[in-house]
Length: 396
Image (tube, rainbow, N blue to C red):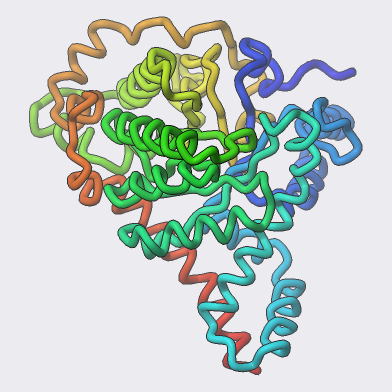
């Protein structure tokens, strides 16, 4: 056996934590091959990747315990094999030539979700429905339409019992989470960046669970996670802008500490909420900051030990596996953020409001800068998928 990978060493700090693949499972084999081809020690890289996930492993042996996707990642599945998907789409068009492009797009998206769910269904069944979920996201273009999001969530979950529905952290999204929870449908709160959103999600889930229990809805295959889009909190909002206006110098390390502080508090609130049975999920991690000339990854180093989900997209995993073997891990989730850093951050309204449990009203979620920027990106990727399908429809 080769030495343990950086991912394994991180996970072993708390084996109750979960490492998830952050892309469609159907691109994993091609990505794995590219990683092995690029590695200086190909045998070692193969062992590392096979311990993360291999269909030849017993489900309990894989380190990857679930999957999360979003529209850009789902579109990546098409770009990973465009000729195949062009043919698949043409076949759907041939079956029903009157079908609009938007409907063919949705059918294609569902097929990508369904195939990914099939990969992790053995894990879901072997581990008693605790792990093995895959997130399928409602269309980000309808993030303010409760009825449409609920209908899409029900439809996506019907593809497989391990399909968890990604719902945006808009005011309307939390009503959707409540309704889906009441139906026993698992959810992942995405487009969420701040403590007040996390609190809103916990409240929506608890209310939905109470309704489900009243109506004797089976919750044995249900779960909830709340995503913190960590790197986007620091880079897409007004943290640096407001700091400069206040003549406060924020280093790259301070920016990372701001994100880490929010996640540490979120984990504490989840632990303290006896009614909410879910977990925090950390995404958008970075290889950052550079300390004494060495690139760290504080997003995982400073929160190691949390009973949380960590979802890793291919580029971040590439950084960890190729360049992060020197990273050091110990149980730090309950260690405080340095006092001088917190004093500085709390003077910045963007951070202070994002860190407060009542920092924003639900209506203000909808105009929050990082949410708008991320929703625009996700909507753009969705439209790219629609455009890909439209060309096939027009061509036919």
